[in-house]
Image (cartoon, rainbow, N blue to C red; front, side):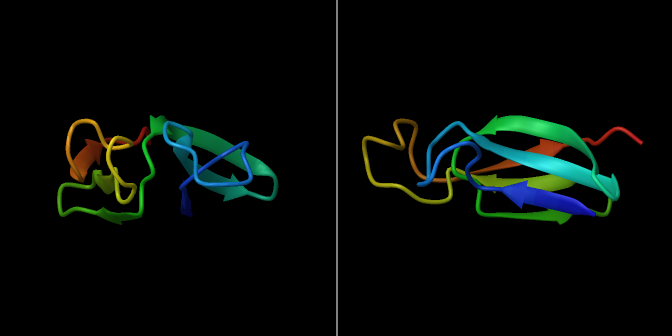
Length: 77
């Protein structure tokens, strides 16, 4: 199972703290990607990679490079 965390370590949405975690069993998890900027969704593509909508929300100037982007993340097997 893969889990997209919008924010980690803070009580409110915090840019740059999002991550994707792969859960492989009880209490076994592996960080696949970190440092994400308010990610909002992810899906697997036909190529087996994860596609993540990054910079999913936040008013200017919290999005200095414009709103939204899609990142391609290849997960280790």
